[in-house]
Amino acid sequence: MGATTQQVIEDGQKYVMNTYGRLPIVIDKGQGCYVWDLDGKRYLDLVAGIAVNSLGHCHPAVSRAIQEQCEKLVHCSNLYWIENQVNLAKLLVEKSGLGKAFFCNSGAEANEAAIKLARKWGKGEKYHIITMQKSFHGRTLGSLAATAQEKYQKAFRPLPEGFSAVPLGDLEALEKEIRPETCAVMLEPIQGESGINVPAQEYMQGVQDLCRKHGILLILDEVQTGLGRTGRSFCFQNFGLEPDIVSLAKAIANGVPMGAILAKTEVADCFQPGDHASTFGGTPIATAAGLAACSILLDDDFLANVRENGQYFRAQLRAIGERHPGVIREVRGLGLMIGCELTGSAKEAAAALLEQGVLVNSIGDHVLRFVPPLIITREEIDSFIPVLESVLCK
Image (cartoon, rainbow, N blue to C red; front, side, top):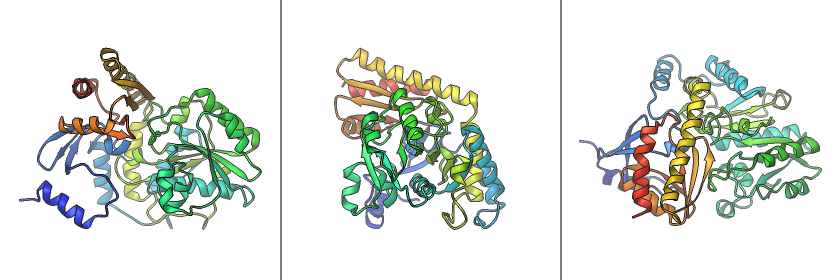
């Protein structure tokens, strides 16, 4: 007889550091868009490990690639060439239009690599990076310094210097902040952790134009938006941009820890042996999973389906608001990265949905974030909408 939910939670509270506000369930297994807890209850998973399990849980192609690689070679270090790593780099470079890839273990590490690469490109003369207010770039000290939210920073000061932030959407403020020592502007194409804030295309084009005008780099944090989430291979393609550096993680290996940066060749070549490294970056097993996942996620037909289902999902959410005025303030997003801003408490709504067998993430006081597996069907969306409606309109 295995441990009970209560035993796992009690042991967790005793032995695991208290860094998460965990919900009182223990996830035991998953398949497709569903997970089951230790008590056997099934949940429709609209969180997907926070946009990680984009092909759903235990996708057969990814599971098979992991199993086959485990029986062959798990780790050998980057002192040697790794075939899976090279093949994944080629796929990502070809789909992005960028030049070269570097692999690491997480989104925070990817953003650290992007920051270091930009400063190396600056040759010690340009080191200042402009980010956006309400951004989120990670929890290491460097990526935290780039994260312009006081609630994340205040307990960990002093932070590394060389960062400043301006309001998203304000090109005038951005240009005023550019200094002789500025090397880059760094932003998320969609701000995820602050409520799914989608900037206007004119603004994003304006940011790129300012970077070109002043001879500085454009860094896009696509840790959450990348690899099919918005219905394009990379979110920047929705805006017609040509960034200098892009950071990736979350969906890249469908649950196996991995991050990456892509950069234009002339920027990527600023890194030389000894400048940056990662012991576990791009291991045979991680890149086997990544190659299997990205081969599906970056397929044109797959992406078209994400766009269609994303439009359908958002339309159904808006329809709830039309049927019940005053319940939903706004629905926003691209593809299957959706924010639903409520007039009431998002935390209470998420808790009620949990009771009804649906996993949803709440952000701040009023926003429900939907980042489901990209394989979600219209039937699964249709099964969720009346549940949400009953919770919001009780």
